[in-house]
Image (cartoon, rainbow, N blue to C red; front, side, top):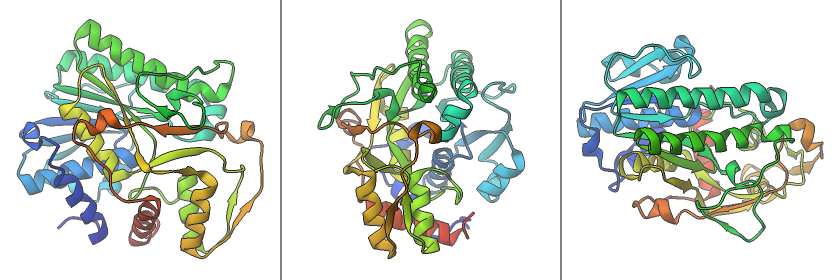
Length: 351
């Protein structure tokens, strides 16, 4: 029996039915995932394990986790059949891994905006040294594919109305401490390309827009989680900026299929944008849509973006042509994503 509700199972079926993913390449293979208990890692691992059962792939997922008890609780007994194995450690100090590794997805990263300004040193060093350690491991293990999960923030601040493609990069001031996150992401991308060129490590880069959906922690401090909490708790949405930032979003199941498409079909040294281009809107527009759905209001209490860790107003309209050329596609709209996320929170009692 799969340990999650019927609504979540639909997402797993959606992932495993993606015809553009060459599932046969995963038969009998071992996949290492970092950031395993985070939103993306959690859904990726569940998607792999569900496909494993449905397609009899006999694969093994190695999940690098810092807290074993939290990991066991997060995955609700899925490790009991031996296809999910926990490795306790940290990307900055990876324990010895004896078994062969066929694929690696490196997703461990700081994600809290406030930490980018309160712990900028840790944000940078965890990203850079953690990625270096994973690339060293890949150099020794010689996997068939390595995906680094990067961010839309590497593009800096594109002009409004501009469609952002993978062959451009943003100019970011190192004197702005908030840029500890995007600058470290840029450097990690450079490391990935360097290892691909010098050591033939099969690295691919996936630049994700803001991604959410089932699996989100109830107390997540990002804007999408706060909007969902407001709906569930029947309280007004309070925006701390004018909400002028515009970007696309991505449903978590579509992020999983994007990762697998790039892992199994991507080209070494390439970067791929991942976003649902149909969801492009401002934060304020999204807040009003969610408020209408949940029967609450939107209020504004403008705060200093520098002290809160919010990025400056940006217009991030990502072009996904290169990823879609691998066969990948997205589904749904912004309200569909919220409905499914809210349902997950209800089904999991807010945990």
